[in-house]
Length: 331
Image 1 (tube, rainbow, N blue to C red):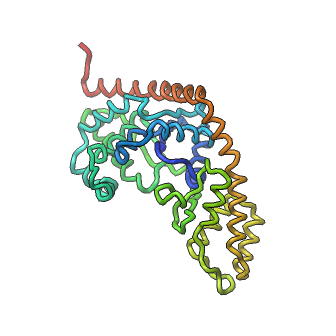
Image 2: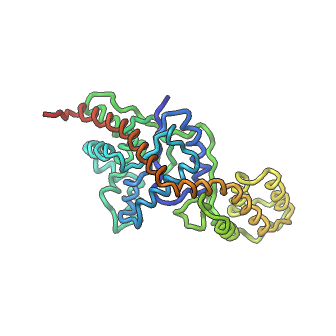
Image 3: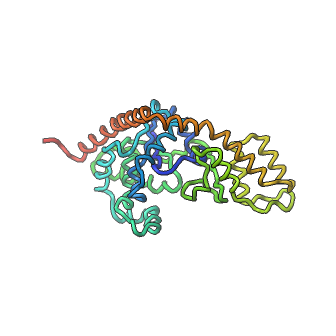
């Protein structure tokens, strides 16, 4: 059984894109591998150093991942800052991470351009912290998006460099894990190809949205003036609506509106109304579960403590052995 690790953002609610893109696969994966899922609250400070309510952000993410189906009895679900060993390994790995390679990191350069008044050291060493997150559990499989592939490559670099410097084979090489399936990509309501909070609130349907909010967002989804000839190729915005419908609506519903579009009889208002109702049917059980778990402080506290204990057991073993390899010894 291989060890799999995945980080979870500590800001923002989960949306349909998260659910179909990764969470459904996380739910399956937790029964097939030794899985560690962590809420990356340290990482969030590199771009949001003074969050309005960091604790509530973390709590909401914890609630929503539990509601979506991650089982804390099966997988290890923990909060990054509850495992101090991560910070120690981060410090030790920083000793063999070089300024030049960190400054050349694509994401650092992109972030530095976007937040010119907050180019902090944590932003520069973000790849080292990510490497610590992975190596602390000696993970071999890491589900990552395209934007994180360079960071995963750097995690391999730091692990191999440690092994080479100390003449050991302690850290295994972690590799990108794509779940072995073609991921479903959920597009945005604004006509963009990606659903996400960073693209704007109106772009995404969140799992916790109530029916009124869902109807409002979907009725405002970007469309065009409609087809002017039979079987006309769809514009990106229209393709987006159909692609969302394909994952939440019945095949008959999709076929009906495809025929309506191809025969130039489609009414986008009717299309959006149907999509909104189908999204509501799909998300209602998840929203109800979110509300139920959110109201149970005792359960959330138990989950967080259990996750921290399980994660620290693995992390403490790694840090103890890394210190021995380096040469730290008690007097």
